[in-house]
Length: 152
Image 1 (cartoon, rainbow, N blue to C red):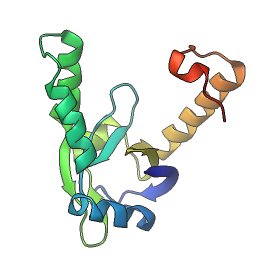
Image 2 (cartoon, rainbow, N blue to C red):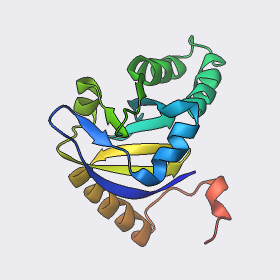
Image 3 (cartoon, rainbow, N blue to C red):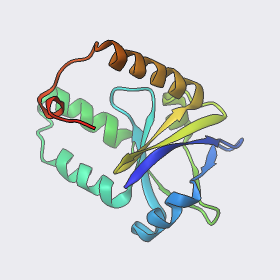
Image 4 (cartoon, rainbow, N blue to C red):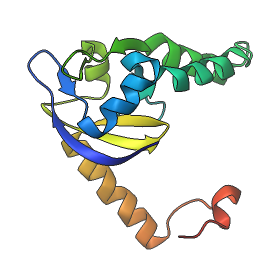
């Protein structure tokens, strides 16, 4: 399970080092193989351990590509999915097309969200956090049944 947010730097080649606290988990699962793809509805990337990604692929394979929304999801997620192997220094080299999609600068945020990570441009991440906090504070959100009884 991945949690927390880490501020990281992209080097000139587009590589970032996965924080040490996550490396062992990623290396023990699928020998450090991860899949990175575009997020469907936000300007960031999704990074999955291979086993988690294979579950998503299995679910995507079961939906009809005759449905326009399903086809869009398949096209976006699978068409942009790129497999990476952590190098000996625990780094991942992000493809230019993925970096461009998320408009990543030199400073990025790696955000753990249980079964995956989000990768954000650091400035954009902080702006998203300000927006999310404001929406929650003002109560300007849609109520959903799965969150109606959720409490902290």
